[in-house]
Length: 49
Image 1 (cartoon, rainbow, N blue to C red):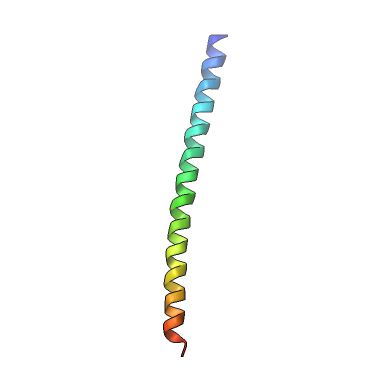
Image 2: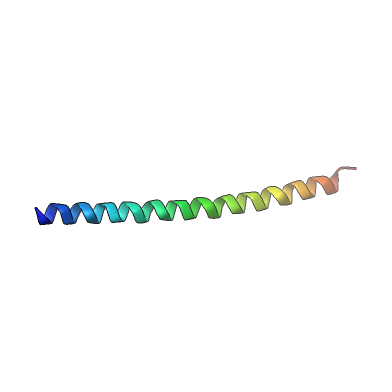
């Protein structure tokens, strides 16, 4: 049936877009986290004698 396959294609397409968006978001947040971690470590080394 054309309509049900069209709905399924639409659903799969949306799920793929959602997954790609999540992967991008995770990559961005990971980069942000690593940058903040680097800043904290740098500050810690400055504070230690």
